[in-house]
Image (cartoon, rainbow, N blue to C red; front, top):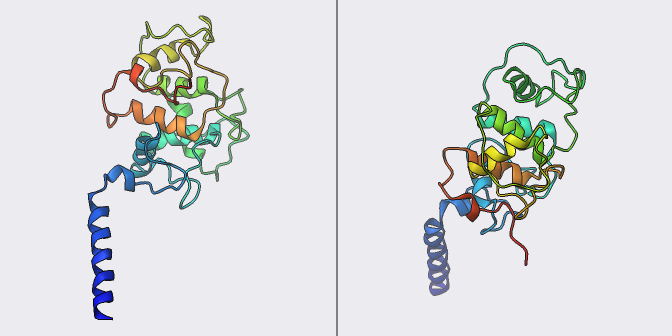
Length: 218
């Protein structure tokens, strides 16, 4: 019996030592639906460690779930350190008791968004890829943008053209294919934390051509 007990103890000790040698990034988030090796794995770890999101449950991140406009501005607000926002939002559909009220106030006050109309924000509406990169671009101060990939689905007169160009040159996105950005597609939770991570100072400096936001299919 003593020999069996010693063997079990040795196995537990070995497992503990092995776990301590695993990369921190593989242990930080601990979500069962964020496998190692995914394009968004490091971004999810970063988002959790920086209190940008805690997932949709204690064990799940729901990477493929569509992100709402409320969630998008809340993530961006938290990435900025949750700054105080003066004034009130003019939106009738943003309750003062909502979790995203302060985030929307901040976004409006800083010119990140002006809502979907003078009186509506549509917090529960799916946020599009075009809207997300535009939020990021405006948060960065709307810098001059030139170059970037000439995506066929990004019209030269679109409100998001400069935002997409900027996002590409900054290594935030490489589009959904060689010639498409898919601006009207809903942005997933995985995509938005990846965009935020790549814009942050914590992301490695990797050329955008080497970091497609989604696996390239044959």
